[in-house]
Length: 207
Length: 196
Image (tube, rainbow over all chains, first blue to last red):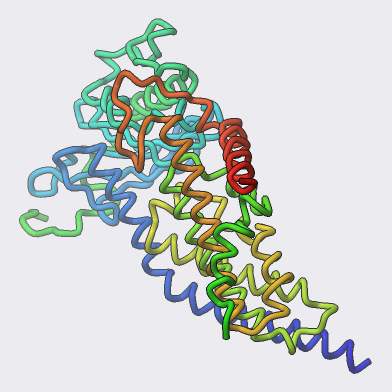
């Protein structure tokens, strides 16, 4: 009996020490991890809305996609903060080669794309993963529903597919097009600077 | 006091975890598509190996035989979680690339194997050296495999193109089958070197 208790005591002791140690590490790393996640968002916002400064913690607007899922629209304040100079939001391409592709896309008020950024994907390394390359992502800059047919060239559209990988670019083009259509349909609401969270620095804004 | 050096070098060559004992192949085959991934995975595993060997060895007289495996696993899993959180906080980009394979270090049989076969029977200092040697051996193996696959598969080394634009990437090398091909050839090379 005593030996059984000893087993229990030793295991419990090790678990307790491990638990405390992990709690400590979690506490220490919590802040840096949150900071890294935020940096990632800021980096993607800077990439998709070039030339604008977009703060993810202010001037955003919580809306719904056409299918009812919530989406947070990050916005860049224009001169004086009373207008919206650009908007960025996340879209999901569910029809990639392997799992969902999460994309951040930035749109200017005239409906032109500032750019897209791949947030996460699980496409085949070396093939589908080439969507991460700047040369490919960059072809979206300046495109809008008016000047572009958002299909890959193989399907008769304007978007370059990648050598050996058509599925990932096709999925992304589709998702970006849907995002642009959503933006067009909700343009007035997105560009209404008075709604949603306000810019952090309100200096110079006449209230 | 002799033999400490040997305790270290055996992990590099005579008992190299990958090329001689063929342990820990799951992460090895999965993450070695580039040299830098191989090194990062190797360093993470080395840290876990050294720490778990230290703890297991210092607790070896306290832990009853019957619960030694669950005890080892708790120790290993704790260190893996620490590595996971730490890398997420301070090496975010690498953490993103290695993704799921960091938590999977827990089930790397190399680490449990060293706890069971070495650390639970040897004094602390020897176990630390053993863990370090094995970890370095594992890292070198991952690095070699990652280098070979990256150069042949993408024509780059640490992300820098070295083979020029005329080179056509052999894509299969950075896909899972390429891992087996490269591993097989390297195992063969190691064996023939050893025989001479």
